Length: 394
Image (cartoon, rainbow, N blue to C red; front, side, top):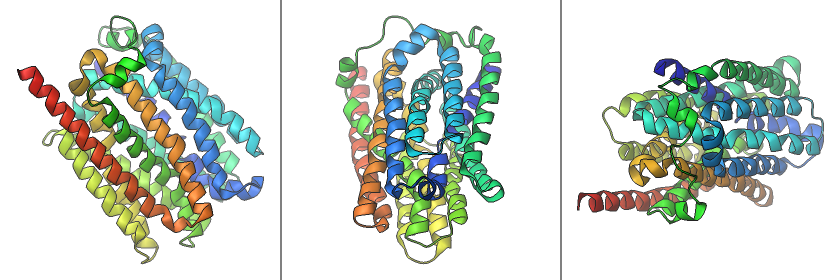
């Protein structure tokens, strides 16, 4: 039963990743067709992220009340409906409208599943879980690129992914009895006994603000690269649109391959060591993208940035129960998810504004600044963990 439940959770994370990279890969084709400025993709991204912030903050309450299985099924179903809505949209207001259920569909399930795996499985499973997300995220741009090439339509790309999401929703619904078994009891019951932890108490936990800021910066990096890498290649590096859409998927392929390998590396190295190594690789990848030496180097930079991103998110999540206590982990993971989505919500639109006002050439510098802030705040969070451990020894 444990293996079957874990397989369902993996499948759920594939479904989370599938639509995440569609907008960035399709936007160079979408914005001229609907007659809006290139920077307006940041508005759609902001709406999606705002929904995920709200739903992730409610994850503790929803998971305790409904159980992780029902939350997962409902959330994936809501995302499927939103993607089908995207596929029939022909205007910017329509895209904004369907961005609302798309955002609400992601936050709660993300927090619930992450916390369950952090509590009940080794670090390698957390990396492999997010590898499944990467499979979905790297498949999305490929599907979009093929749809644009074969059908001449970005709408068809969204439609194909929407249909896949419906199939995944059906699989999760049929698997609901697994969540009621003894192995999945904790997941079905939610975060454990007692009521949800008030937000003000979560924020006051030692190290909470630092780790929230680190999450903010990490997801700002990941979402900015995912949303704007394709446009950067088209506008600033003169790469053809179809080629750029395929290049953007290299970033997510790097994340996917990196997380598959990271699952094995966790058997030898600590979460903290892997996070530091990942931050170093993200910086190296950004420098490769910065060097004006042709398309090949830029492609390599996107892959290296993806590999660098691979261990950061899952290793920080996996260390949450140790840092804040198992009794606080569901609430803390929800707040971490919210902080991450705020970064996703604010920073890609900010880059869009800067790119329009100044230059798309700022792209690698923007990534490097966020990376530096992430490294500093994670250092403070790690110091807080050491202080907690020392206090417990006393």
